[in-house]
Length: 323
Image (tube, rainbow, N blue to C red):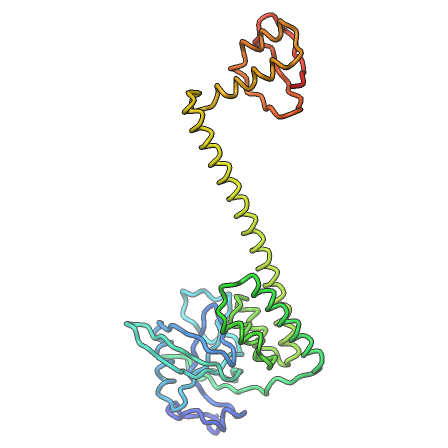
């Protein structure tokens, strides 16, 4: 351990970053994963995390390891090395701003790192890490085909998301490097820590692109369904609003004509006109005529209406008539 251990005050050198294990402060990430070749903002507020950032800023290269916390870990408990994944991302702190008790950072991912050994837990976590070999391409043609399919899926997703900034569209559609494209997608899609970690731990470009295509296809289908549901809900809302306006207008007209708020006079008059046209016996017509204000039939053109005459004088049997 003595030969490979670096002094806490010794900056991480380029030589060590090329394959030799080196020690580095570690910043645990809650509910997110940071990928290489991406730039993201971070807010740091826990005392141990602030101490890790300050230790990184004291070094020449301002490097820190960002490793995600396992999903089963509760946020209320103090994070321990066992709560973290083994693979994370080496990042460079590009900008830091202190606002009260919180550090606001802009960081850029540079390389994947794998934890070899935890060497410190207090006052902040520190680990000996190693940068794995670069991702290799197994089947070049298959990777290129998967990349084009991914870009096609991206175009489908962007069709449902007009609010996406133009610069983001240019990045995702113009990316030539498959791994960089996959990492960028992993950083902007809400996949969850477990799926994001699968992408980060992929050992080949083939595996990484397969995961990116699988996860993106699912997200596109979810976006499509959400758009469909929103459109249908808006259509139903517009229909309900139109019907409400028409009802309010009808009530206003009926009120002006002195027919009451409920429109009962108009309904009764309409029923009288239909009864007058129906071929009914006199006794039935008379009973129905007297009781028409108490009816609540559903009247449609050329529809059979069942009229109960139980309350009509002199009529004891029901009868079905066409109105």
